[in-house]
Length: 213
Image 1 (cartoon, one colour):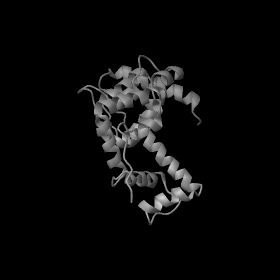
Image 2 (image 1 turned 90 degrees about the vertical axis):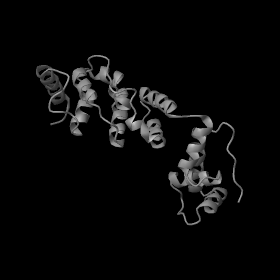
Image 3 (image 1 turned 90 degrees about the horizontal axis):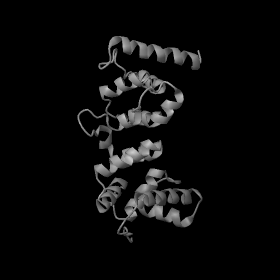
Image 4 (image 1 turned 180 degrees about the horizontal axis):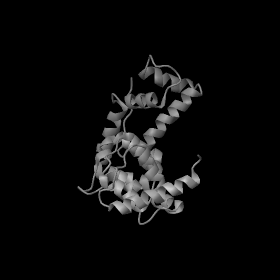
């Protein structure tokens, strides 16, 4: 059984596309694609899942699994955590939820990454608001609720400063998300009680006007 050789500058995006194409070709009944799958996974049921297609591709390149192939590509490209943080920042800025999801699968340590002790990590990037975001347009412009929800689902660390920031910014959608997850404290640590109460009051009044009863 011949083993394919990675190029000098391999691309993870290209490898993902190769796996997707293999899965599509098998679904379409292409005999060559089916033969490739059978050669690597004789007992697999057809059509292949995306994960199994990635496994076939990894084994064709001589690796026991997809993660092993990805790790080799990262080493060849010299891509470490700093690169991953830069990519995460770009995905969050672009609100590219799927890109962020794939990056977290390959770099799970990002869920707990912080630039310093006071930093909110990736979740801080997704929820950070420059000023008051009570207006829905401002909140959508400055924050990334879909990315924040993905990060919470994946188990990202929630720094206390993030909750305080949401309340101070009156970011209604994110406050509602954190409230439903039980992540908001009884009282914000950095705001005086009156300010915290007013922030929640503003959010509650606004939510009652737009949410169905």
